[in-house]
Image 1 (tube, one colour):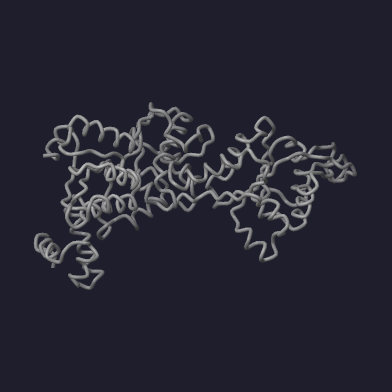
Image 2 (spheres, rainbow, N blue to C red):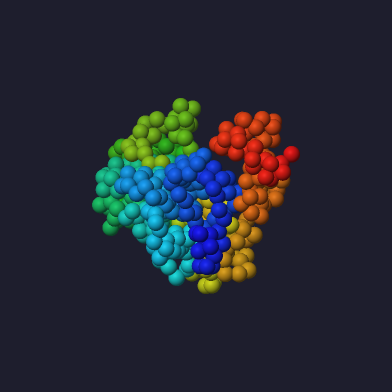
Length: 432
């Protein structure tokens, strides 16, 4: 009945008679939304919801049940359900709910920016996952203090955005926010950059120059890639942090500074300390509070928000007419492991938009490395995409039987169906 109704509304739908079949279908291909019952044979809706979100957190799942209760509704929403409907279904509300759900999956460029982490608007920190909410709560808590902060995380995760958010939510927000990349300069140039120099201090020093510490007086100094500094530079930094004073290169004057330090690194500084490559006393001076920015592979649920945000950013920059991202492309974006983190995602979206032929960002516009990964990791059967839900189910059964050496009882256990059901499906699909 629902399939017929969806067809009248102009939607193409697939059916699954239990949770395990639904999970197999999601593993095989992309969907814009899922409408799922709570009580089903083999695997119930709550368990299927968890497994579907583990496969692809971007798919909105609407739960329906005839056994309405506050507890069930709370559990469904807690497990990531988009919404909750009770049977008998109100078809007007059903259509509205699924319209909204699919709108979350594929938004148009005339809609507002995707929701950012609570109260994080304007910081560039985007994400509603548990890890990002926890990070933002820490930022809000420690930003008003005067504590030095060490921001850790892989390259490309957005450590500079965190540093910026810390500054602009602090009591120093009216003061300067000065950034220095410690890995970009040789030691002698970094010393001059940070502390300044007197005229004639070295060849080419034709005038006195104030360093970044002085420029940041009354505000915040962000020392990016602090783990790349030499032991000699670490000793000089430690003195400034301890004494709040410095001397320019080639100078004798002692200069007092009032600066809050936020440092960032993609190295494991504890390991660097243990290996003797980083000063322990400086580490503890910097690491009064530690904030870790999670890699993108640990917050796949934030990828649709980030992808939509970057798409709109480049649409505005390049003045293109773009309506959104296709379900197949978004499905790949959510599943890809993103070794380059948010920076790699941003680059992928920009490239995809440049090579768009229509009004939607598609898989064939993404970088070749991502397309190759999809070909190697997302094809469910012999490199061929199943055309239907039944094709996907047959491919999953064949794959499981191959993995179990033809042991049907073990295959049924792994598929979470009865042996009798498996034998029936083997006959129906003519699996040899």
